[in-house]
Length: 531
Image: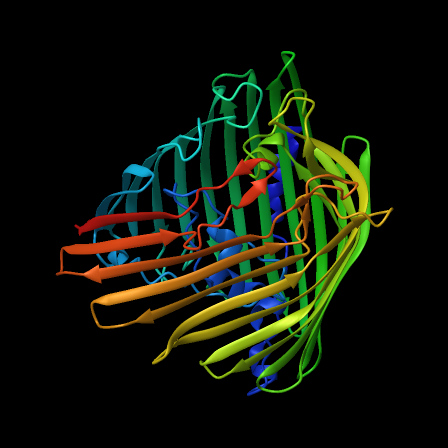
């Protein structure tokens, strides 16, 4: 069966799916990613958060990351956000070695080396940190190493010109203790690795394809837990006159071994054919269906998206996208490292109703504002609760609805710096109108960066969460979460940078998980040597 599905995924790349000829509407053109996802492909993917010296909200919360292989519309109402960290100028060099120490960190190391080759580049990466305890047994350490190869064919090649091939892999460990449990010295070493092969081509305006093979492993050294997540995904786009026809085929398999020494393996196959049309010079739409099968769980739902160019600066979007969701325990373990994974297997639920509407306004290259409303309902939606063991968490399920208005602001780099901010109201509730634990009613985040001089660059950031509960009855309310930080980078010469990072400047007692206090006021000073 797996062999058949693998063959089907590869064959699917010859299917068709694309956008209309741009020459049909000169001067009035909708964003390509509305139908084809091409702009999503073009977005620079923000680097995954490095093992930082401070435990805080992931940078993906601050700078949402778009997967470069996505061709279908995926949260298309969000702005195309730039990488707002101006402290990575060393990427213009062959690499760097950075080291630092701070109030709770010694040492902190981050290194990258890249070597250009003909039509490509090879990179090696390493990072590590050691955090001393800020309350008893809260010490933590992490190590990660990786490598990747990016290669592209010439645009004048006879075979698949402009094709990009990206092979990458990484492996790391995160060591910490359950410092608020009945056994606060209990250790956990969370090991995880990934290997990924991505082959895509968006150079040909008539035919685009993307094939992605991703395999992730997760294990816990002190516990009988091992998980292997395999994902094979193929997408293709093709245009014929005003018609877009396409397909996405997605196969996922989870192989899990955990207490009491039980092995389980579950999979899901998702298939989405679509057809897109240009109704007028200013309006486009795409229609299709989402079909899936995961054991005895079968799913079928229509899919539709529309976009209307109201003016050169204003665009209206709408999407209906009911989807099945399929995750392994490691997905939730990486959200909450204190999760008890005993007896957990693959987790399947359906967003049987899901839609979004939004409006985006862009003023030239100066700023962009977008906002809208997202809604979904789901049965057996998983959420975190206290486990029967103090200081650990479990996953349970409930039926939910979620309505979420939001707004995003993006002011591009200019004489007054660069700013990104977002605000979202999140009303995730069960059938009894109780708010789902650890889901904030209000999320605010912002980052402002400014070049003080040609050598000194600074970034100011703030993250805020409000309206969170630790139980489904909403009797235990968590205090508001506020983290204000500053990053500074001073270029001493062509080889050396000096940097400083400050987190939780107001020394707030922050809690992401009940009883587990996050790092208080913290700072890190270091030096970066550019190769």
